[in-house]
Length: 198
Image 1 (spheres, helix red, strand yellow):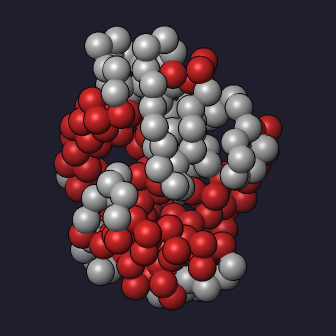
Image 2 (cartoon, rainbow, N blue to C red):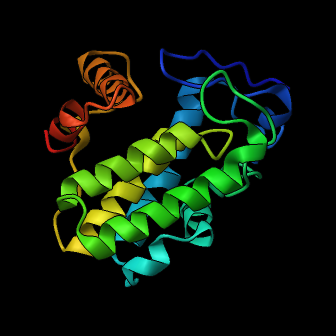
Image 3 (cartoon, helix red, strand yellow):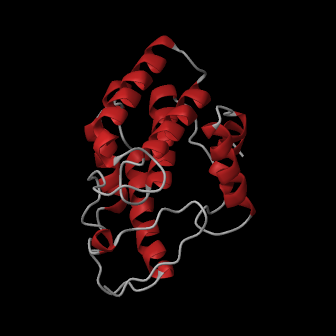
């Protein structure tokens, strides 16, 4: 396959068989891939903002997969399909369904019992979801859109700004984000909560 990708810190490399799922054969560079993915994602964001959905339906495997399909379905054939390879981060590929079910059950409980303030609930969900790493690619962007859907549809609050910059570019915004995710990995959610609204 002619797709040769460079990866920045925090990006999970695609396996060769995952690259073969590219639906647009003319894409040859990271920049071209990012451009097509971004267009698909922008359409998914518009869809999500116009969505009328009950909170309990958001916390389902079907919805999680559907959002990923909406974000990447015009670029990757495996959009919405759990990854079949192990990565250097995340849970084992065989544990994805059970880990996701646990997260969805936890989130349903958090929501029903007001366990956390709205922003913290959505950010905790985002962090756990990205750590499961359900899909071969796009997990960070997918988890951020899921948090936006939760905060907007579940609580009627504005979507997060996520640093108001591109996280696809190397630079200060991406570094702050990755450091905030690492802090959350250690149980300190304050930096990620602050970044989400910055």
